Length: 284
Image (cartoon, rainbow, N blue to C red):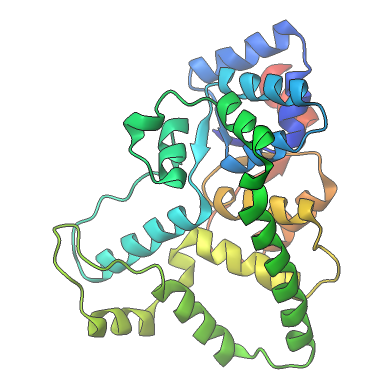
């Protein structure tokens, strides 16, 4: 059972007693559950008001021996490659959506795994808190996202984003993720890419389909442009299709999950509160 922990869930189990934590770690060791985190947990930890508590939470996170969901765009690229190579009937072994902490750090930093193998969550959070400028690209992306969301809401309301426009947007998004060559190194021609794009089914790329479903929901609602909402989306998009449960007591996040699930054609995670999780696994 793959269980994605939202930040508040992680904080709450971090405050539990030793017996609770030992029981949780036993479940992980015995393979009953796999706790899943993402790089966005490091971002949230680094923004905590109490640096000592943030670093302690980072240590606790690592003590759970979690798996880590790959960064959203990397995960989506793997999805597109798998769909494209299957369409071309070319053998391809797609990387799992979950990886080790070191693999995720290496992919994000674009460094060799051997270079970052010993990096801990404490190291990453400490980097963010010691060098706040590292957050600048994230805040810039968030500011641009707010502008785009509001503009697209106006366009939706005015009826400017019809089915044809959305298909063009889907095609453009997937096109940017297509590989340049086959796994054996052969260059891929433009004609093959265009033929694939003419027939691409977004639902075969779960993290992309989830992102589009989240986007459609955002464009049809009001509000939802806070920094916290931005972080929530970055938790939901990669995790929802690739875990079994999303542990959270956040009502807004739960509402988003239920709204998005209704528009997806594949199995997705169910939200579960900490109380329900405890009843199921830790405190029967």
